[in-house]
Image 1 (cartoon, protein in one colour):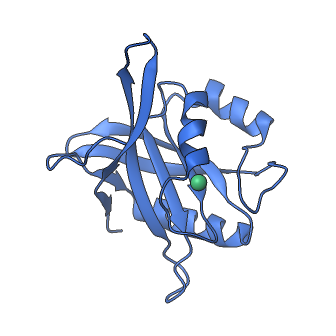
Image 2 (tube, rainbow, N blue to C red):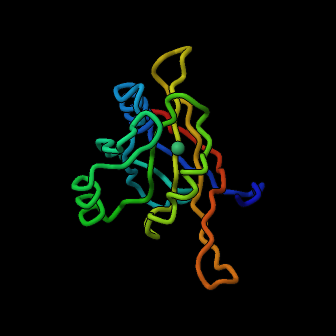
Length: 158
Ligand SMILES: [Zn+2]
């Protein structure tokens, strides 16, 4: 994982996206929720403006996620503003797992942002969220090393 750098641009998300992530995360509980993020690069950092929830078809959805293949393909081919991936950790902190790092290799370069959510029990509706940029750095083997670099997450007011 790349070192956190002081001047990392924030990842911004619309309030409606934060609410949609929280709702989906809770509706899937105790299973992991997953979906993709749409948006654009904007002045001041990436802006996520839409969340597209997907069915989790993993054999063990309590601990892993696999987006439904048809929903996944549909978005990959039809959503030019695809910028990121979301999933939830219903039973642990929203920090990347070993499996999450391994899964980065399956993501094309259009995926620039990686969000992980966890239920926040105190108020029940706004989730704990961590945001990361997906880093792709050439390594000595001539392939890409994939990493996640945490970024400040800003929720825009209504
Ligand atoms: Zn995970």
